[in-house]
Length: 135
Ligand code: THU
Image (cartoon, rainbow, N blue to C red; front, side, top):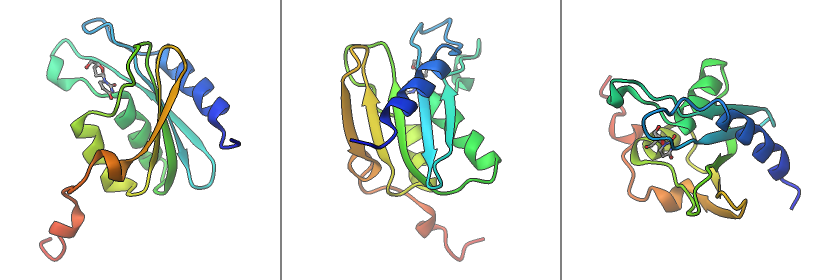
């Protein structure tokens, strides 16, 4: 399947090596590909005030948005765990806000992959359609 999987995995793995996760010791890397083919990476960054921690997925997405990119194709998420690590609830909301048809590729520690769409992961989502006309 020629969909840049190898490049996405390589970049996500590199980002994972930058993970700042001294509290959980759970290292996550993400690589987000925009519609025009650019790749934005992220890792999880934990805070000593735990609630300020940010996930790898949101770091990648916010980096892209902050650089003016708003349309996305797929995101690869890699961890060293045996189980596939899906995006948390907060990340699902933020992914949905920006990319309502995102392919999500989960890669586990054995480098197996599982593919899903954000629509499968986040059914009956809250979104900007509830806010139209209220601003
Ligand atoms: N984490 C992510 O970066 N992405 C996920 O999809 C799940 C959780 C991070 C947050 C925290 O640094 C650590 O993993 C444990 O929750």
